[in-house]
Amino acid sequence: MDTYEFKRKLADLAIAALETERDGALQGEKYSKEEAASHVGAMESRYDTFKEEAQYLAAGHLRRRVEIEQWLHELRRFKDDARCVSPTNKVRLGALVKIQDYATNECRIYFLVPAGGGNAFQVDDESVTTLNVASPLAQSMILKDAGDEATLHTKGGDKTLLILSVR
Image 1: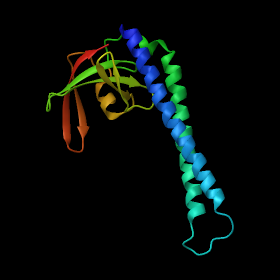
Image 2: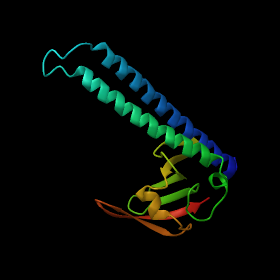
Image 3: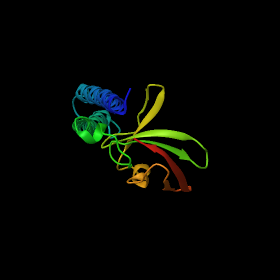
Image 4: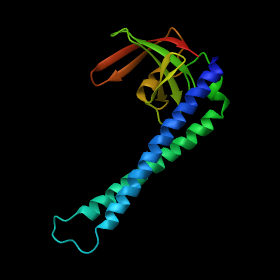
């Protein structure tokens, strides 16, 4: 599979994962609303807060669903954008970046996406994790080339990463 097809497949997988997450939030919202509606009448005591708690929970699920819908819109637009699939030699939105952590020698491949992120996918025997372009890790690598080092500042200290490839 060439880079173009590989990136399109990753974008499709990222969209499908977010759709599943959105559906879960929708189910949670529906269940919470049903739970709130099942508690009718006035509170029997000051500790009788089931209805109010279910309403808060429904509102939280609604906010999450709206956030995921926005991410889905951005990812779908991104997938149709040439930046998603075009090859690149610099780390930027749409790049597939293979890095090595100097401390652990661990190698990882990231696909920089405009929204969401954090999902790992297996495509053509490669494990790729989506990475939000606004994340600290992505920001430490932006506009770097293969062979460059990136420094990620963490609470536990700085991590130095070697960018092995960018495509």
